[in-house]
Image (cartoon, rainbow, N blue to C red; front, side, top):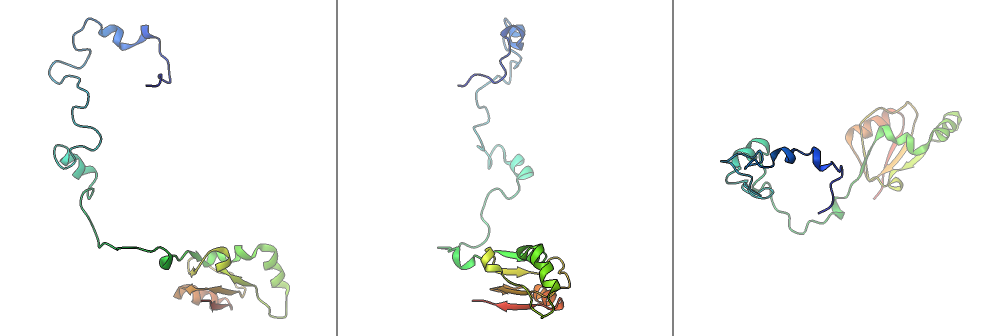
Amino acid sequence: SSPPLLAMPTRLRKQRKMRGGEHCGHGRIGKARKHASGRGNAGGQHMHRIAFDKYHPGYFGKVGMRFFHYKKNPYHCPAVNIDKLWSMVGLEQRKEYLKKSDGSVPMIDVTQFGYFKVCGKGKLPQQPIAVKAKFFSKQAEEKIKAAGGACLLSA
C-alpha cells in the first residue's frame, strides 16, 4: 500500500504505549478482526437490516414499469424560461429595437440555442418579441402575447 500522507514519528504513536499489553486497546471479547460485519454493503437484508431501513428507506426492491428499448431521441426536449429570452438577443440589440419606430421586433429562434420548448417562469419586459420554438407552455404563450409579442411554432 501507499505510504501515509502525514508521516508521524514512530516514537509518538499510540502503539508504543500499547506494546506489552495483550489486546492493544481492542478488548478481550470483541477482538479486532479484519471485516467482522462483512465488506461494503453486505448484510443489508440480514444483519444490517435495521440500519438500512432506518437510514436508506427504499434501497431494496423495484418501482415502476420497465421500458424496453427506451430511445432518448423522441423525448429530447430541452426547455428555456421566458426570463432568459432577452439574454439570447443581447442588451445592445434590445436597445436598438426600442429606438426603432417602424414596428420591427427581434426574432428569436430558440432551437438555434439548443432549446425546443419555452416555459413561462419569470417576467418579460413590456417590449414586443417574436419567439420561434417547437413547443410553448400555456403561461409562456400568454406572457409573450401580453408583452405584445408573437409565438411562432416550428416543426
